[in-house]
Length: 148
Image (tube, rainbow, N blue to C red):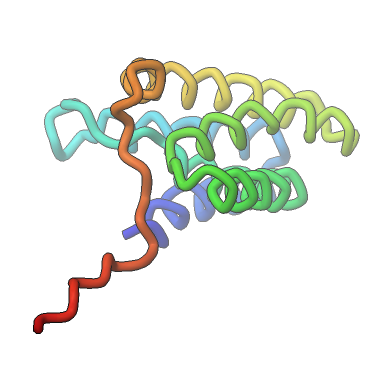
């Protein structure tokens, strides 16, 4: 499922960037993210939080920024085991990464708006983090006690 969400952002952003430049790529990536958030086939009801689609869009628009964001996500997840914290921190790192890498203005604008979108869609997660009720991902199954 995550690979489909990544492809949903990657394909339109990459095709548009190669065919018409960074402005078109940013618009196509943004449209893919909005379509993931409020999908047409669900009657514009709530969809996903756009993180994987954002990653795909950035891989198509500015691959180094996308890879850096993925690296931040993996590092934060390894340290915290919170997917929401990883998503928020990775998204927040995108505009600075794009700036440091000297990306053109459409990438800077896209990464800033994408970071804002991801942050806004994680408001409930932030509230659960503050309350101490956010779910932490368990990578290993708990061992059952040996029977006597």
